[in-house]
Length: 84
Image 1 (cartoon, helix red, strand yellow):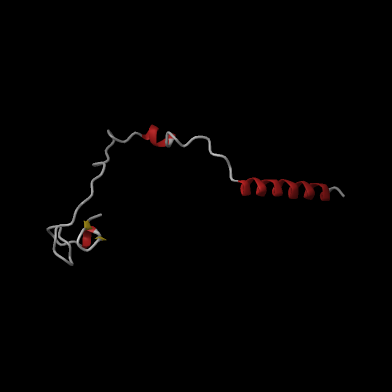
Image 2 (image 1 turned 90 degrees about the horizontal axis):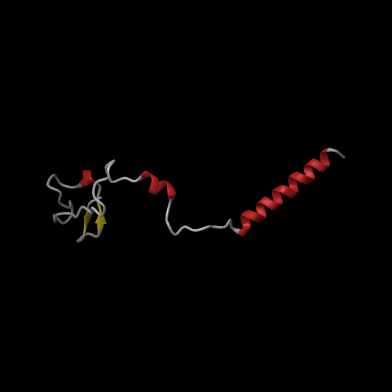
């Protein structure tokens, strides 16, 4: 996305002028290119699928555990009530 520093705004590539200038102030907009072009050679799908290195073992939140406990109790009661 082209970024105009003067206007402090992102622009769609189609809204820029033909020579890549900002439509408001007329200055050349910056095109950020942090990592370069993504190609099959520099894309590591195995590393992306593995996730972050420091993700660690994340535990389920307490309210999720409470929800599962309530669900198990409810379904157990429904099974008991079925045979009464």
